[in-house]
Image (cartoon, rainbow, N blue to C red):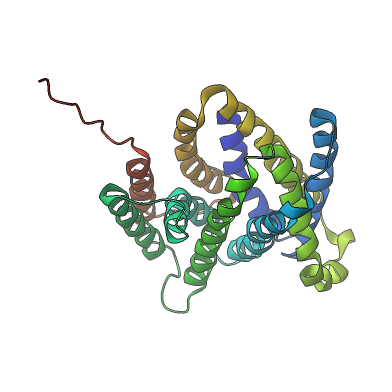
Length: 291
């Protein structure tokens, strides 16, 4: 389940990269997450027997939706118009470290020296990815795209902060459903011009297929598989599979989109993954001395 979820997510970088050449950038996520959120609402009703949440929790759910869907997707789709799917996949590996840094900033966690070292390692890897990007010179489209990709990583990581108190009362499925629906509702007014100007008749069958894949497989199936897998093997073992996502994403981009990836970028991706692994290593237990 976990391997299937990670593979579907990795393929999504290339799928959406193609999709935004067929559909206006902001029209794509509105349709994708609007339909996906409604489908999850039906699944939630079937699996849990209700769809409600406490009114007091709506502000936190709205914040999660704004960060995790609205802002994240604005950065995501526009990044893919400026940089490659491979860059998005490699830079996405820095997400867990960004989450740890943000959690420390708001006082949820405290980072020790090893975690700060891990952050420095991941930052060095990120700089290598950006430096190895074609067109990464000052003002180049590759540099702008990588900047937007990092913006996506930051806001996606920030969306995990308000989720933490919600997980004490709701299932991941219920939170995800409201995140999609509320985040899409906030995005709709911004995307209205692109939704209205979109020539839907000009979208090819492959274009509609990319939207369907992003909505059904990368939006619904992946989360159901991933959270079910976590429930069976635990979050620590599940985290190992996340390390594969970036490099699978690069592989799909090379095979399907014929993107070129430099050695520097691959090294940078490996350094980022190394930093993430360092941050997630368990602390060694001190043995008490025998009397």
